[in-house]
Image 1 (cartoon, one colour):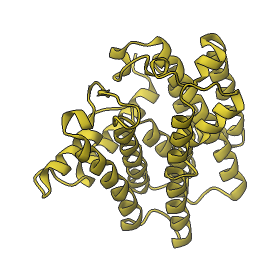
Image 2: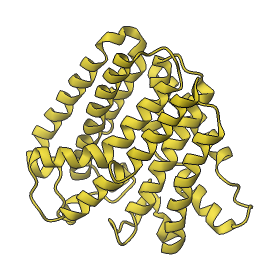
Image 3: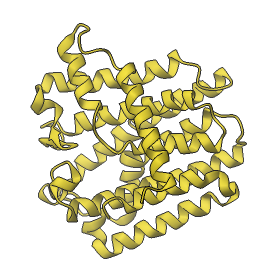
Length: 297
């Protein structure tokens, strides 16, 4: 049975895919090899969870969908760049992503490095090229938030912490700190950028929304760790068991599978609680939360 949420999610996934196809440089534009590799890394794969969160938050703030589409595309480009770089031999050294060879395997390492650089630049180009908010000040805040989420105080910093702790035993608060940055920062940016495309939320509501995003960002990583431990490569679309193989600290290594699943449910409840003041307007955000928790779980 196809649910209302499935129809909504599919329509938004098609929307973001179509937009990314248009926003990325055409494959026949010089330098052709780089542009082909950029399109290879971004198009035709992934659940587009971050865009779904942006669209859901945009509905909450009564945002124009065209604005949210650009903001969601920018976040997804940052995410795609991070995957390309994470898969490089100097990082996680993986050969499979979204069910196909990783970018550096399909092309080569120098091209993959340039793909990541170019996708990151394009993301910020989009945030400056289009009118996404009612005021220039809000749009500047959106640009700042995505920059922080991608940088040393966000995703890149979290990856640095991850690499520095391979083979080490972390406490639960230390692991949480790492993933608030590595995974959570970009998820929080997706939610907040989507919401800021509209104009109906006050500061207190934006703070509650950020609390929601923090919880769901951590929940996403908990589920990811469980899937890495239990799911097959065919289901994941990437090499299963890589965390254990590389002796990385995860929620599963610290808590075990059963407790990690319980933690994911606790984080879902916390995320729901942060949305209580929004009533039915947060319907889509609650549905995306369930989608994140329940994916192949």
